[in-house]
Amino acid sequence: MVISTFLIATVLYDTNTRVQSDCSLQHHRIADARLNLISDDQLTFYRYVDKVSGRVVFLPPLHTAFILRNEMPIVRLFDNVRCDSNTSVLVVDVGMNDGVYTVLAASRGCRTISFELQTKCIVISEITLALNSALHHVSIRQQPVSSESGAVFTLDINTDMCDGTYGIDNKVSKGKSRPHLEPISNSSSTQQLSTVSLDDVLHDENTIEFLKIDVEGHEPWVLKGAMGLFRRRAVHYGVFESIHWDRGEYNTTTFSQHLITIAEIFDYGYRLQCINRHGVDLTLPRNIPVLWTKQQFLALTTTGCTDIAILRNHE
Image 1 (cartoon, rainbow, N blue to C red):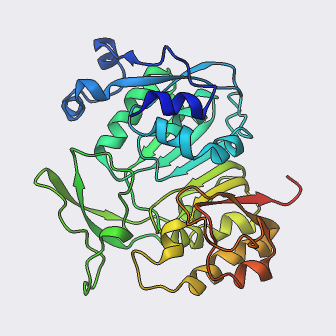
Image 2 (image 1 turned 90 degrees about the horizontal axis):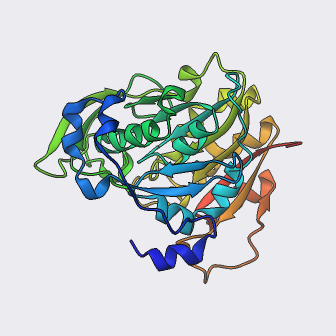
C-alpha cells in the first residue's frame, strides 16, 4: 500500500490515518473465536473525513486505498446518500468485501443490508463497524445473490483471505450440473449456500437509497433478480461493475444477452451512465456516449466502462 500515491489521489485522506485497534474491540458484538483470522497488521484502519456527515470515519484496512484511488466517481455518487437515522431509508451493498461502502452508509445512520461470501471480509467489516459505533445499523448476510432464490452453490470459502476478486462466476467449474467453486487453499471451508434474489429479500422495502453491486462478473444475474425493485421505482441510485461480464471472462453467456437483461431497467424510468473507466483499455473508441439511451445501450459491442450508474429519472 503506497501512502504517497494515495495522498495525491484525494485530499480527504488524513495524514494521521493509521490507527491501531486495541483489545477494547473484543467487547463489541464480534465472536472472539473469529478474531484469530485477522493479523495485527490488518487491524490498522484509515481515518477518513466524510464530507457528507462531517464526521471522522474509520475505514477498513484492505481496500480503502484502492477505492479512494480508483473509484472516486462511485464515492461521489455515494455522496447522495443522506440518511440521518431515517429508518425508512435503506442502502444495499451486494459484494461488500471488507465493507468500505457499508461502513460509510452506516456511519451516516443508514439502515444497511450487505451481502458477502468471504468470512474474513465479514469479520473485518464487523470490527470496522464496531470501531465506528455503527454495527447496529447493518445486517450482513453470507449468501450468494443471483437471479432467483433457492439455487444451491457449493462454495469453498478461504478463511485466510478477503479477496477483492472473489466471486461465483470466476471459479465455476466446467461441466457441473450445479455451479461448484474449486478449492482455493488448504484453509478453505466448504459450505453449501442457497442463492437469494433481491426481489425476494427486499419485497417489503419501499425506498432503497443506494444499491451497489460488485460481484466479479455476476452483476447481470443480480440485476435480473432485482427487476421488481426497479419496476416499483424503489431504487433511487445504484451502481454496478461491468468490466468482467463485459469481457466475457467467467461465463458463456454472450455480451448481447447481458445487455438485453440489463436494458429492461430503462423501461421503468431509469437511465444508465458510464461513470468510471478505471482498468479499461483507453484505446477503445471514444465515441461511446457517457449517458446511453436504451437503443444505444443495446447496440454496444462493449460498454467501455468499469462501473455503470443507475439513475432514476428526475433524480
